[in-house]
Image (cartoon, rainbow, N blue to C red; front, side, top):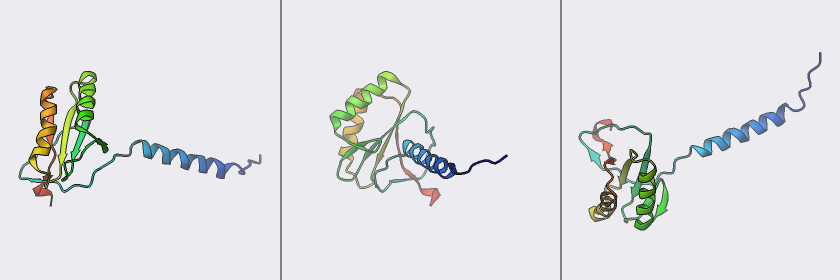
Length: 126
């Protein structure tokens, strides 16, 4: 029995493209920030999270995408209506003025979110 291997390279190429596309689906956008440090931390689950990034200039990002405070309120409200047990992670640069973080926290408070975490770098992990 003679098996043809002419299509092997085509199949390998298509498999490579498929793997690259699947890898892009799980791609997580991160904003370049300097994490504040903490002496003690509490590890939380990484499921059902909404990440809100605040950089040192006060710009807000939702899961890595630029946003305004109005779009943050709209998005957070939609998520709260669909999945009220979603945990909010506020990730702010350590040089961010507190008033910028407070604006984000005020929006979440008005929407009555109860699962809000401030993400920090563990001092012990250095």
